[in-house]
Image (tube, rainbow, N blue to C red; front, top):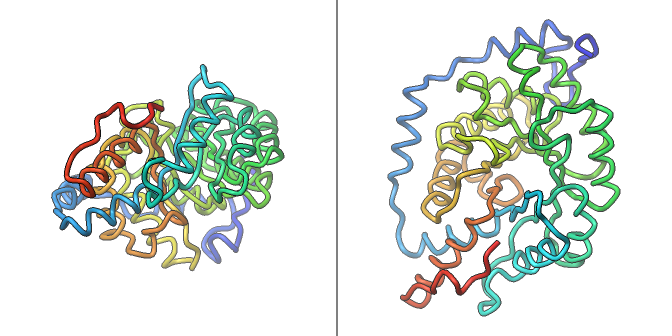
Length: 319
C-alpha cells in the first residue's frame, strides 16, 4: 500500500505527487512552538464576553453540537431518545436551536435516520473500527459502506495511529482516500486521536495529511483517550485548516471532541476559532463540537440568561 500513494491535485495542487514527496512535505512543515501555542491558547481562554454576546455564543454552540452516544450498551430506544433531544433540546422553549448531528455506531444509523426524518439534522457514524482503527482495510470499507447505505450523511473515521507514528504516512493517506471514495455524498471527518500523537508537530502533520487525502473535517479525538480536545491541540488544527485554505483554496472543518463538558469550555473554543481561523469557520458547516454531556450545561446556562435562575440539573434529560 505504501507505494500506491498519489496525492490528488484537487486537494493540494502542485505540491506533492508521490510517497517520498509526501514525507518531505510533511516534515517540511514549520514546527509548532509548544510554549507559544500553549500560551496563546491560555490567553484566548481568558477572554470575557458581554451578556448579549454570551447568549448568541450559547445558541451557536448548541447548533454546532454533534450529540453523541458511543457505548457498548447503546440501544435503539436510547438513540431515538437522543434524536428527540437533538431536535428539541428544551421542549419548553421552541427558540432553542437544534443540534448539528446525532453521532452513533454504524449498526444504529438506520434507527437514527428514521427518527430524524425531515428534521435537517445530520446522522454521523463512527466507522473504520472505532475507536482503535485496528482492522483490515476491507473491514473498514465495509463498515463505512454499511453506514452510508443506511443513510449516514457523515462518516467519522479514525486513522491508523500506529502507521502514522511509524512514519508510514502513505498507508494512512491511502486508507483515507479509500474511505472517502466509499462516502459518496457523505462528509468525511478524519479523527486524529491527538492524545496518542505525542507532539504538536505530529498533530500538524496529521492534520495536513488528512486534508491532503480529502477530509472534509479533521477531528481531534474519539473521546476514549486522554488527553482529548485540549485548547492548544485545537489551536494547532485551526491553524492548519487556515493555512491549508490559503494554500489550496479548499476549506476544511474542525471538530474538537472529548472533554468539552461546560459552557465555558464551548465558548473558549468559539473564541479560539474566531481568533485563529477566522469568522468563516463560526458555523456548523465548518466547526462542530463532539459531546454527550455538554448540551445540558448549555441549556442550563441559556435558561439562566433568559429567566435569571438556573433550572435544576434534573430538568433536562440525561444522555
